Length: 82
Image (cartoon, rainbow, N blue to C red):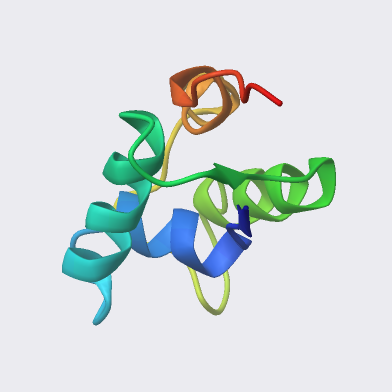
């Protein structure tokens, strides 16, 4: 099982990111159950903090609203089976 970090989720969400195409494919494969992957609460917190940032350095070009960010990565992942 792979642990997807915040950088992958952020790059998958933000089209202008250099690694967007591969990060998006990784996220999609995990969402479809083709890649055994998980994300931790810490990763979700980091993702939320970055993509909702509207001022300052490292602001995303397309910030998400808090509601969009809260529903973005986690609900799309299938529940793993063991």
